[in-house]
Image (cartoon, rainbow, N blue to C red; front, side):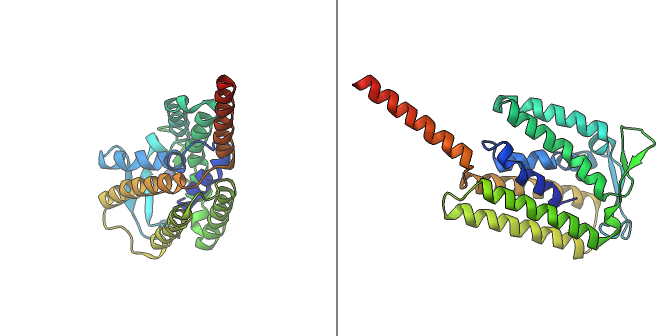
Length: 237
Ligand SMILES: [Zn+2]
């Protein structure tokens, strides 16, 4: 799944209004950010086999340390713990985003997701066997995620509108290019493109998000400003 992971990151904004969309993106894609590193290290393996599923030429032959259910849950706990300083609720939301990756992948992959490293049971509902079904489900998820984010993070300035919609347009473009484009020439291309894409989209989301404000976060800022003003007036009088 590709834009479906972005969808849950966007939809998580009202649950953690003070956490940047950039970090929400990193959490939702975390498993896929570690994966290219392990591909390059030769620890996990992917093969390019056009037709493996209708949707993608990639055959995920071995990826237990990123894409087994157990590994995903361990990553989720570690990620959550790493961001505890942002508050318990924010850390919980980030951890859930990391874990959500496995369940969204399980929806679209053919049975290739292990339950734990070395498990014989492989999970995958195989939505990728149909391009139309994938587009329908993932497109609906993405549209819902965008709608939720836009509602809860209104624009602060023109950049907030431009940067955000350009990001959405670019994500859709990259998604379409993945479907209609030729298969990647090599595994290292997949890995480097994955890492570069991840960094670009996370930085872009962070930038766009700085120019939008969650209603709750803005109210919080106004209230604390007001109370400090009141306190000062009280002290001065
Ligand atoms: Zn994945």
